[in-house]
Length: 70
Ligand SMILES: [Zn+2]
Image (tube, rainbow, N blue to C red; front, side):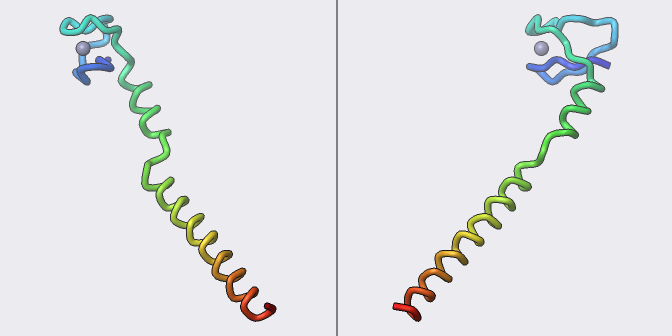
């Protein structure tokens, strides 16, 4: 199977170009593999959340440290 990168319409293997937009068709297996290899957005959001938490803890720690030690 092949898929149009613009219309996301699937075609038979013997088709090379999309009849609608004339774009060159991509191999569906290659596209699906690439999609699977992508890192989901939620992963980066959780990384960012952990990073923000660490920065917050460091700031909190340095705040109290300066309070105790002048
Ligand atoms: Zn198309």
